[in-house]
Amino acid sequence: MSHAVEVPQTYGLMAEFDSAQTLLDAAHAVQRAGYTKTDAFSPMPIHGLAEALGFEEHLIPKIVLTGGILGLIAGYGLEYWSSVIAFPLNIGGRPYHSIVAFIPPAYETTILLSALSCFGSLLFLCGFPEPYHPVFNHPRFSLATADKFFLVIEANDPKFSPDTTKTFLGGLGAKEVVSVNE
Image (tube, rainbow, N blue to C red; front, side, top):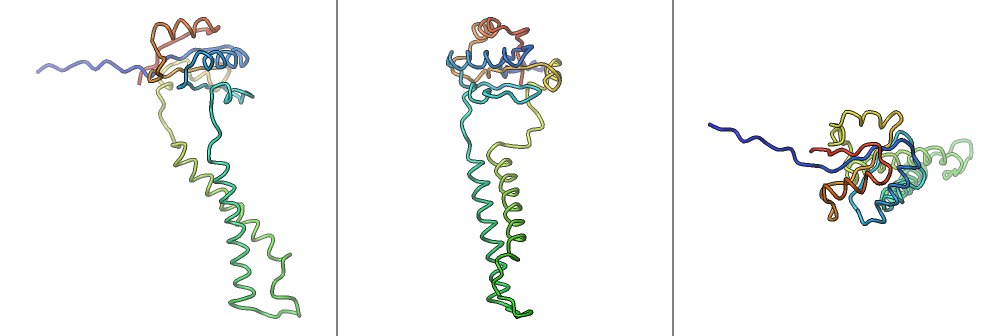
């Protein structure tokens, strides 16, 4: 019985850069060249990199704001319902509806629902957690958390061609351009 040897599929090409500015310049050049399925990895945030890669604003901030507003309404509404409608107590002649006393618990429910909506939206919209990514296979990628910068163009990009894309990335000042397998 013969076994067919599986040839690993190419995920894309990864270019290594020595500085944040060269990575940013390369990301701008890649975007201008028409590549759409790209990603960058760096040991620190780089201002303008997301825009250079063409990332768009997501729904996450809107979902978190909505969760916070709903948390505020729910927390304040629960306090109002329990203190004024369901079980009113006259303690020392104070009013049933005491706005100042309602603020800290309402604030806490605002924070709670904001955090939960952020966590849920990251899980469902961004696909977290992602414990495996094909770029982890490359031995030098561990330097992405220390002092190196990486730019990846995925093989499923419509403009991707192994030879021309490798030449293009090499011309952007990349220290090394390697193929990344799935």
